[in-house]
Each structure stands twice: as structure tokens, then as C-alpha cells.
Image 1 (spheres, rainbow, N blue to C red):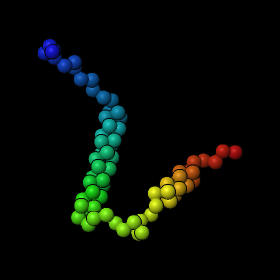
Image 2: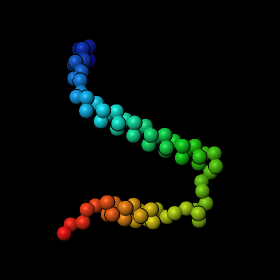
Image 3: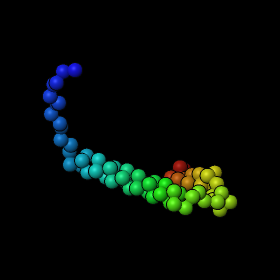
Image 4: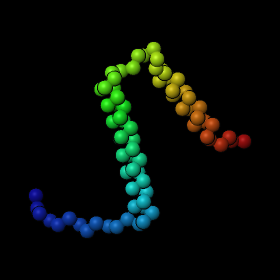
Length: 74
């Protein structure tokens, strides 16, 4: 391998840099939520399956929310 200098970094436009920062913040928040769930499972164990909502019901509810957000086609 040759020891060539890295090419000069190109600066992002301010709007693009803001978008990257916003994506990083959302990704970080999602990871923090996921870590909190895992810590809760480690502390309290898994919930009783009888008290959980089946994933099929969650999927259908989410699809219904998405359909309600979509504008109707005439």
C-alpha cells in the first residue's frame, strides 16, 4: 500500500450539512430508544405474551395510519 495523502475534503452546502446533522440526531435518538428497550428487557425480562399486541395488529394499524395520510385519488 502506498502512503498517498487523502484527497481534500469537499465542504457541504449549509442545507446539506443541516440535513446530515438532522439525520444523525434522528439515528442517535432511535438508537437510544432501542437501547432503552433492551435495558428494560435485561432488567425486567420479557413481557407476558398474553399482554402483548400481536405484530399483525400493529402492522394493520400502521398501514391504516399511512393510508389515512395519503391523499385520495379522484
